[in-house]
Length: 442
Image 1 (cartoon, rainbow, N blue to C red):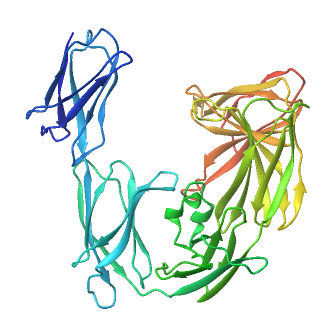
Image 2: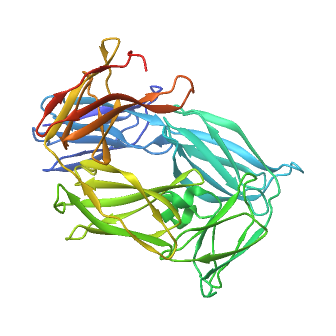
């Protein structure tokens, strides 16, 4: 049995590349000809994953995950050409090119976080750069050079083959910050990561040295020479210590401590939970979420440590399926952590057998994919309406239950808020139905 096809770029221009056909029984690889055509021989009547692995300047592979050659012997694979970002870096005062600088390129996701794709040093007599850019996401470029303030520019999502060739960075001189990192006994701490922004609290960036602005040397000393003009704080992080922070100054001394700890036991319905259960804590530092967490031991005990002073919100996450937690419970009560102290906080989540369900509509029309927050028994969790506006929340304890809808705030464009839509009281084993129409006046 054979299968064949061709590979096309979105503008209908053919090119030469490779193609792969594979399933659990066989694997074949071939190259396309000058017209972009390919073929595979000796295939069995079974689903195959067929994909193209393009040569540059085309973006990533494309193809089909389950094609049966007995049903579909001819296919066309469409790939897309990578975009280009071109520009130059200049001294803002002299307008002379900056010949050596560091550039970071990445995507900006709809939720606002950045995903870095490339980070390297560029040496260019003219200060010019050219970057291959991915498609479909807004992008950012961050440029830093010794003695200059870091600068960041952003742009809209690019299309296949798109080119932006007028990007210009004009860097201004930066202040020089020197610092020293030590422990409580005054002993230098080498290898500490130094950040000039809240990336230090990001779960990915804060645990990767490549995102740090500098790293303290063996004597605990660091120098920052390319800070952005709007930087306010310097943060220092080292495993085994809590994060230290201070307002920027020309000379800075940081003392790292072990921070605070919160520990306790978790019970669901009066018994330790089974399976993969994790506890995490969150606090806000200068507008950024700082998170810590860990798994329970066999007795349902947890401990989170290296905490900076502050109030912490808790989450308990149950199980995992396809890389996602099956259920998450958010604890209403907040707990305060203190440097050098251990705070005990036991988490008792009352698991009941009551069910709350219903339909959420707007002027009689079902509202789909609406996030709902359900609060009961001192904790809250979330649900989302389906395409018919239907929601269902299980395992609720008896007693008061409040449901809030997460809605856009029409008085503040771009903002959201929670609107209380349901207040009810559940009996044991109840299966209660509560519908709500969002057109009801608040």
